[in-house]
Image 1 (cartoon, one colour):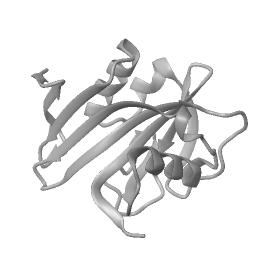
Image 2: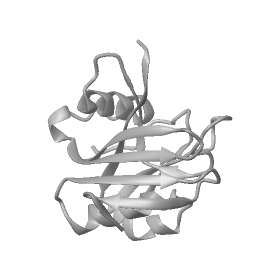
Image 3: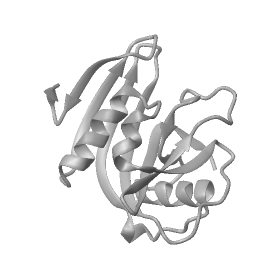
Image 4: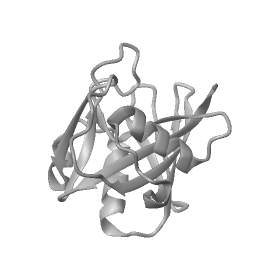
Length: 161
């Protein structure tokens, strides 16, 4: 199967007021090296956002989350002055019992939701974490980064922030 460049999913698995966070420390040429993110990745041929999220969650954690238990929370558009463009489907889901398997992309760690902001996150990720906390409504978020990976613009549901 071919990867669909520019189309990705990200899921924050939740349990006991914690998120399962992936510390991206394993891959050499990783745009998110040393950052903390959820689990997810690129679409493969013929996948829907839900199918991609389900597959990526299983590959990275070993958790087999039923598609109907994935909550589709947002569409996030990332634009970089480096020339990168990504359209990401953002999900949340309840994690099953048991610990995740080891992940070859980094270290998986349960982090209390209020401590997530203390981690090395992308600046824009803080915006969608706040939005996930504030409302259960579906949202659209556009984030533009400069060549040094600084967030220079954020647009929530069509309104500049």
